[in-house]
Amino acid sequence: MTVLDTAALERALNCLPLRFRGPGGVAGVVKDGKVVARRAWGFADMYRRLPMAAKTRLPICSISKQFTCALLLDQFDDPAVLDNKIHDFLPNYRDRLPTVAELCHNQSGLRDYWALTVLQGAYPETEFRREDALPLIASAKTGHFPAGAHYSYSNGNFRILGELIERGTGRDFADLLAERLFAPAGMATAILCPNTRVPPDGVIGYEGNDDVGFLPADNGIYWFGDAGIAASLDDMLAWECHIDATRGDPDGLYNRLSAPVFYADGTSATYAYGLRQDIYNGMKFTGHGGGLRGFSSFRMHVAEERLSVVVMFNHDTSTFTAAAALVDAALGRKSSAETIPPAEWDGLWLDEAQGLVVRTAADRGTVKLHYGPSPARAMVAPDGVAYGQGFSLRKENGRLLMRRDSENLAVTARRLDPVEWADAAPVAGRYWSEELDAFLEIEARDGAAFAVFEGLYGKGPMERMYALAEDVWIVTSRRALDAAAPGDWTVLIQRDTTGTVTGLTLGCWLARRISYRRAFT
Image (cartoon, rainbow, N blue to C red; front, side, top):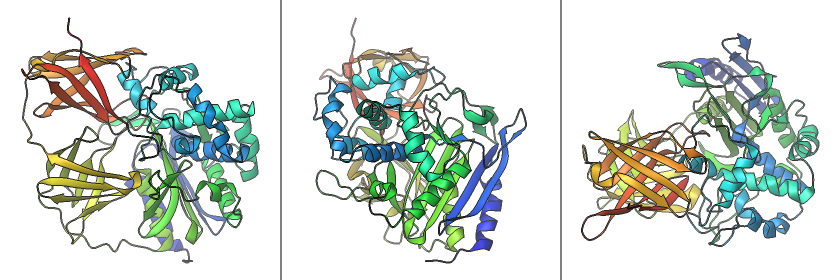
């Protein structure tokens, strides 16, 4: 194992507030089972001048998923005994129902329910109660791929798991977490705090940046299973120490969580039981991020080095980058990958199989990829292939070939010819989705186009809509109930033989290929 580079780690910690600018944050490092660094800076509430501290509890958001899966494995020797209860949550589902394991591994094929709240007319500040989730999940009729075939991030998987645990044990989810996980790990102040309107310890999450300023985020969602845990830096470092202390027990919960899993075709998967299994700078790690409007967090565990890093901010920025920088500093490592400046990488492409637009651009010495909810970056290697975290890009015969090993997905995208402007009048009108039991209305206003969604939660705000290519549009969705927001929704216009618009297909990475037909009146 590598000896801790104390000086480099100290420098990296000192730089965090400057590199990741915002109201406040905390960061800590565990090496060989001991806490070797622990920092808190800034303010939990800038108006009340409430300092951020290592004991301040922050929403850890999706990092909660591993705790949900750990509780599942703790309570059920074989979680498959709950497979026959999944139909209770998906009574209208026409495809093969996912198993409990496929829910745990994000292989269910279920569209993300937080993304679907946008299409069901929810405002970003809507109060989303506990009873609002299951009707939306139950409305699903199809998935966007067969269960077990691919990976797709879906919060609904873990909401179902949380409900299954309560029903299967007859116990309260919060009580079980406290008794079976938090207490044994020494997480003295961690709690389930599912109502985001009342964060513990008076902490405020902030939206914005130094260019536009920071404003308090208005969150109103209730979540558990997929998120909902609030924990301090001290709590999270206790969890990392507990992981190290139980590293030699093959039946220990974290070893079970990080065991190898596979897709239905036998391909090895890189996500299991609420944990991403990935490689950074040549090192295998397990970890996960979390985000809510105004909050972001990431934890990384490098088992071969007995090293863990936790970073949490009360503003939205790349906590993965921050955590990775601390890992590099702690181990005295630098990236040795040989790269070349990107050239001729600007392009607009269509992944027809997924129904999604792909955009690539040379940006600050990297290739910037727009495909998922947030942009990703890749470095061009001497072989001409651009490599990013969990994906690669190469161009061949006028097409973009994207390999996403973490999703068991190979994409072949054809180049699109961009348009500066397109007349929205032919596509304006009202559309109906049988999959969602919901409406989409497109309005053309003097050369501009807007969309509004109407469904289970009412009629939502007007969303901006832009033409990208012939019969290819996007609807932008940068603010939603959850974070990260869905991003760009690709809109593919459908016409009959006369050229009349008859319908469209709408989708984003979190919720793909949703059909709408034109509602003629």
